[in-house]
Image (tube, rainbow, N blue to C red; front, side, top):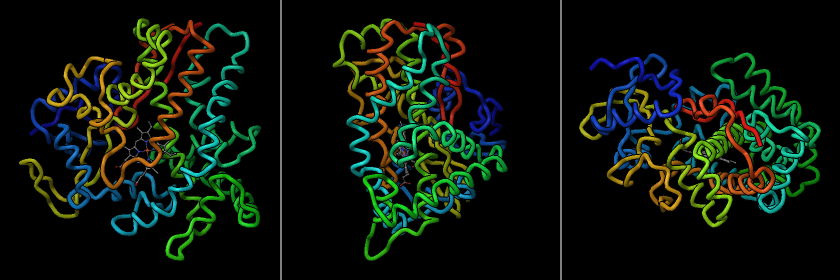
Length: 390
Ligand code: HEM
C-alpha cells in the first residue's frame, strides 16, 4: 500500500493537532498500518491493546536493536542496548543510582531551588521565551546537580549534553560533546572512587551485583544515558504542560486556584501530549506476524504512544484535556513491561515542583504567540519556543 509522505515520522514537523489527526486516521484504519521512518518503510502500531502487547513482547520487538543504531555509537554500551538477562542484570546494577539518596535530596529541596533560581534570572523582565529561559533548562540542571557538577559549570555542561544529543543528525558535534563530558567527568570519577559521596556518580561507582561492578567507561555511558533518556523527555513534558495549561487560560486559572488539581493535570498531560509520542523499535531479525500483519525482518516499528493514549476504546472523549480524568493506570507514556521507565518518579516530581514554583512566582503568565508555542515533532515532541508575558 503506498504511504503518503505526510506519514514520515522521523522528519515531519507534525505541529500541534497535525500529529494527532494523522495518528487518529491511521488508528481508525487498523492497529498496525504502513508508515515511513526517515524515508524507509515502517509500520505504525497505534491501538492501545496492540501497543501494550508489543511493549511486553521482547521477542518480536527486541528493544535494543533500534538504540544500537540511534544512540549507542556516541552513548556507549548501556543496559538500554542489551537484551534479556544481561539487560536485567545491568539495569539492576545501574538504576538504584537514579533512585539513590541524591535523588531523594534533589526531590525534597533541589528541584524547587533550581526552578526558583531560573525564575530569579528573569529579573525585572515582563516577557521572555520561557522555553530557553526555563523549560529547556530545568531537567538538565537536575541531572547536573545530581552528578555534583559545580553550578557555575552547569550552562557549559548543558551545552555539551544538548550537543551530544545531536546524534545522528550531527555526528561530529555529538562525538565532540561526548568527549568533553568524558574529559570533565573522569577526574571527578577518580575522586569518587577514593572518597564516595551521596551522589549518582558514587552510587554508580559502588554498585555491585553478584560480585560485578561497573568499569569507568560503563559508568560514563550510563551518565550519558541519563541525559539522553532523562533530560529531553522531561524538558518536552514540561514545555507541553506549560503550553497546554496556558493555551486555554481557564485551565491555568483552575490549577492556580485549586492546587489539588495539579497532580491529575500532570497525569492528563502525560496522556494528552506525551513527550515520547512515537518510539521507534526494530522488529526481530526474522519476519513476524502481529495483529494480522506480516512485518518483514528488521523493520522499523513505530510504537505510537500518543495514538494509544487517545484510543477511544479506552479513553472517553480522548481528544479532550480533562483534569478530572483518572488515566494513570492506562497510560503507556512510560513504556510498560521490562523497559518501564526507571526515571518516571523523578520526572513526575520535576513536573509537579516546577509547576508549583511557576504558579507561585508568575501567576499572571500568558502566551504571547500561541501559534509559535505549539508542540512539534513525533519522536520527541515539545514546543521549540514559548513566548510568554506576565
Ligand atoms: C516525562 C518524562 C519521561 C518520559 C515520557 C519517559 C519515557 C520513557 C519510555 C517510553 C521508556 C521506554 C523506552 C523503551 O521501551 O525502549 C523509557 C525508558 C527509560 N527512561 Fe524514561 N522517560 C521520562 C523521564 C526519564 C527520566 C527523568 C529518566 C532518568 C533520570 C529516565 C530514564 C530512562 C531510562 C534509563 C530508560 C531505559 C530503560 C530500559 O531500557 O530498561 N526517563 N522512558
